[in-house]
Length: 309
Image (cartoon, rainbow, N blue to C red; front, side, top):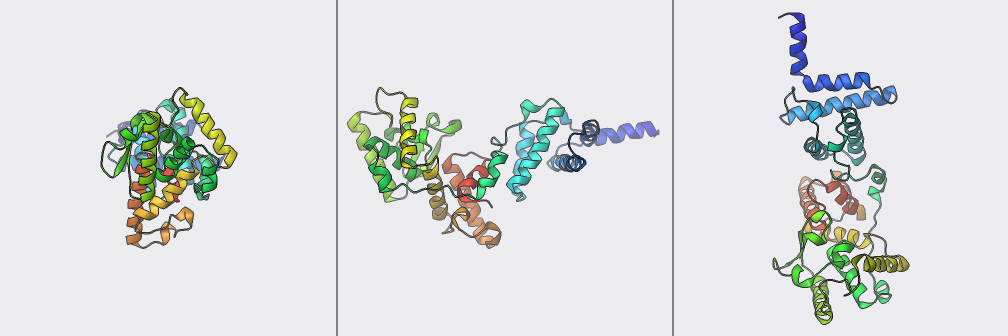
């Protein structure tokens, strides 16, 4: 076979590799060290896709959300830390910018690794317990909203839109969160397994029946107006963001992990656990991820609640 034909054959056999090398050759952004690291990451990416069944003749200009989700899941399964995954995503995004595929690349949050600037906060425990002192400074409606958040790990919007008759009408022993209440429309079930949870549900039922309410938002008041009132009161009495949700996640993790304490709350680091304990950890993290409503592939966000692997 003539030399030219051999070159064409080789180029086609390694089409993806060749394309990336050409893009790197004509786009020398950053320092030599950065260029070298980018080259390694992108060539590693093509190898990983090829191992996933992608042909060596696959066209890099078809790079899209599907491929990125597969890559991030593989990186997470290999135990790569948040910073490493974020750095690799930065190089994927750089590549996409050079081939006009920026609009086809999901955000870091969409692939479950959050924002890079939040990586430093992964070791910070944001959990906060709802106290009698908090409750004493609220009216009955706000008390119930915050008790729903604390007992079930609900987001504020989910607690505000909570309708007892709907939430308890599906599977016995669980509450059902309707898609229109939930972030991203991800409806879900949360197990009811404590007397405190049952007591709050009874209080919410009685309150909504007494007031003829279909949610925790007062009749005649707009959702945004009441949400602003709740948030203002929370700030006033020292309740921070998802603090109750963080506390619930850590308690739930311990409950379903055969007694393992969440790493972020002082539990044993994942790497130091026995193989059996690691299996309990993995199963518990999946349950907590599902009940928090984070969705498949967003385990890294759940890690801010219970701690990293």
